[in-house]
Image (cartoon, helix red, strand yellow):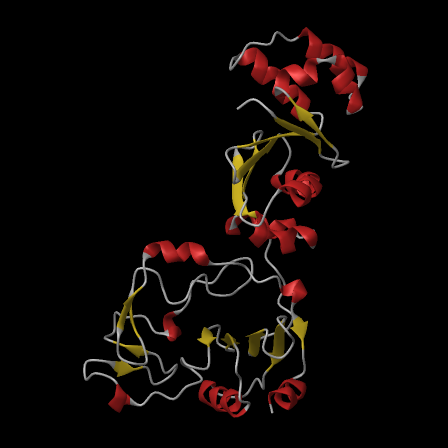
Length: 304
């Protein structure tokens, strides 16, 4: 497929092209993007050869002027290529994506100069792109470490008290984990989230799973034991409970995935559950800047 678009990264303007290299070689087209005269002449002096070095040199010279090469690959995939950092490519292509990409469009963004590529579905990425927080589309290891809104211990809840907005409340620092669980249980929490303990552990919470639901050992098979600290049912010392949940994301500080990929878990009903290794790719960083900080007494009041 030869057709596609050139996008100007700084202005967001874009032009439909018949073939990227030949289109930008035409002086009148290059001038539409306000490229310097010497660059326009240099583009014309390069020899075009299909899928050869000349064509690549033309493309790279145009990209070095801040242009982004984009084209479709079937009905649901679009590529964006440039010699700019990934964040600048996404920023420059945001307007194009908004006008031309559907919720299921698979976007591949490549920085050819540094050899870096990110892939995302536009529907999932749209809120992040519209918030201009492009770093959260980068791989986890490329994201900057965020500053937490408060020291541990705290409770983080997903959309229970603020209509879909994450909320975070500080908890009494001298309280033991078991006392925190009792405190949260008395609040009647109906949402899910995380309980960040003072000692660095982070426990997953939901109304139907530990640590908010007391586990009656009589309901479980005899070979299943319950962790006396976090309340998670396991089948032996090698089975992970939440106390061993130590693989935290360097960007947002939350566990990368829970339950732990590649391990066998036990549900509260006593059923075994195997978590495949591919589940480890399911982590999505929390954007702490969008989290609403709420005093604990206000959280308790809303819960009642």
